[in-house]
Structures are given as structure tokens and as C-alpha cells.
Amino acid sequence: MFGEVSELYERLLAELPVDDFRVVAILHPHIWYEHGPHQVHRWLAPHQRSGLMAVPPEHGWRAALVAADLLIGDHGSVTAYGAALGLPTSLAAFPESAVAPGSAVALLGSHAPRLDLTQPILPQLRKTVAEHTPERSAALHQMITSHPGEAAEHLRTLCYSMLGLAEPRTEPSVPPDTARGLPDGDWPWRPTAMHVTGKVHGGCEISLDRHPAEMIPAGRIPERSHLVVAADHPGRRLRAVADVLVLTDAERLGRHAETWLGEAISSHRGLQLAAAVCGDSCIVRTRSGDQARLSGTDDPALYASAVFEWLATGRVLADLSAGLTVNGRPVAVS
Image: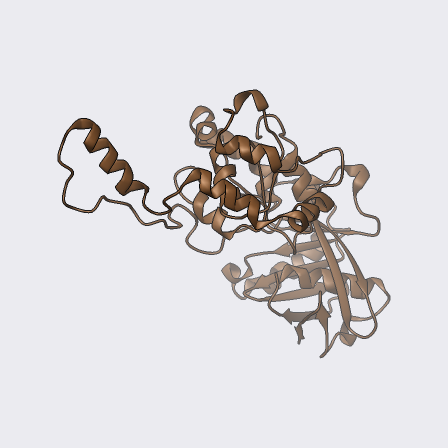
């Protein structure tokens, strides 16, 4: 899939709203070992800056499958395992000639829908979920294993009998299935540059949609959107044309974060807002020097966009007060 449908990750990241979806890539180990981790990360660098999470080749793919709600795959074994777990599955690539007739993968190919990249992706994914039935997963699961969790015991018994040797009395060693290999802390997944559209409803209700800026072609940038860019984004052009510049690690600067806000406003002529993320809060400063702190349970950078949309309607920062909700969740303002 990675070789034949290389634009898939870009399409997924561009079309799926940032705050509703997370996209995780499980690449075949041969890709990592043939080309090397450095090259793989070079290929995927724009995608990872846009929110793609690439699972390391050694560990973590099973944890990712367990956590997933939907799977897009090819004729590889990981796709079959995910479908057997009960995940609604669609196929982005499926070379029929490379699949053994009568195999579990062939069964998967006989009923899994194909993803059509000439059409919008999100409606297809929703259709896959709506039409998924447990019976499909059960049949595939039965083909993959008739003795779940007992493969080590059965295979060892078979192998020792074929060798004509006595089987060891001890239990076969089966390492626990863990998330080892995945990052220990929070896994950065939010894009570092986003086009954001929003609407201010009655009172203090604001709704926002965010999409990765690097994945959207120039001709498809949403109308009436504003551009939010992280201060450490490597793209100088994107930083230069940002409407909102965000310092994502303001805690590192301590009290100097306030100084950064002023310097960002004065040094970027077209900048409308400067924002600094501190924990679950976002401090926002306008070009006129007005400042507010917004706190909630979402990505704090989301609140900078809420302020932008609020001011774009002609309102003033001082009117943002108790009762503010962003995407339906309460936000404290001080």
C-alpha cells in the first residue's frame, strides 16, 4: 500500500478533521530495513508534522490495532489480523495475483470494500463502519486461529513430535504483549501548521474545524480560514504568512514567554495573534496588546483559533467571559 498508494496518508490527513481523527501508520518492517529509518522519516516528515503517527517496526503495531476503530490496509498479515480482531476494514491496495487462493487474506479480499481514491474518503470510511458485521470478522478469525492464545503450546507439541524428542515439562515462553517501543509520554500528533475555519454562534459558542496546512494543495485551502503555525515549524514561508503563531512549549521559557508574545507580534507584520501554550492553558495576545488566558480539556492551541474567530466578527477580547464553549466543551477565560 505504501508503494502503490503513496498519496493515501496525505489524503487522509487533509480530509479528516484534526480534532476528530488520529491517523496511525504501520509500515512493513521490510520498508524500514531496506531503506533505513532515516529515509523513512524523511519521506514521512511532512506527514508527521501534519499529525501522522508512524509506529516503530519492532513493537507497537499490535497495541495500535487494539486501539484502532477503523483499518485501511492491503494484502499483508497486519491487515488480516486487524480485520480478524473485528475492525471495520477497507483495502487501498490488493494485488490479487499475490494472494494464495483459499487463504485468510483471500477471504478478507472477498468481502472487504475497496477504497476509491477518486472519491472523498470520509464518506467511504463511514460507509465501511456502517456496513460492517461481526460475522465477517468471525469467519476470518476462525481461519487465522482455531485455538486463540494457545499457538505456542500446539506448535511446540507438533515440532517435538516431528523431531521424535520429549517435550520440555516447562511452559513455553511467550513474552507479554505490551506497548513497548511506543513513546512513553504523550505522543505528539497535532499538526504544527493548520488551516482553521470557525463560526461564532449565539452567545459565546464557537465551533472550529482544523486541517493540516502542509497536506492541503493551494487551490483547496478552505475559504475564510486562518493559518495557525507553531513557532518551531521548520517552514519559514508558513511562519511568515501565519495569522496565529503559537509557542507550543512556553513552559520551557518560564516568565520569558510573556516577552516572546510581544516580540512575535512586533516582528511578524501580518500576524494577528501570538499565543503561548502552558500546560492546558493558552495565553493569547492581540496586536493592540490585549491579552487573555484560556484553559480547558482540548488542545490549548485550539483556543487561539477561537479567539481569532471571535475577534474576526468585530467583537472585543474583553467580552470573552464565563460561558464560553469551543466545539461544545467549556473553556475558562481569565
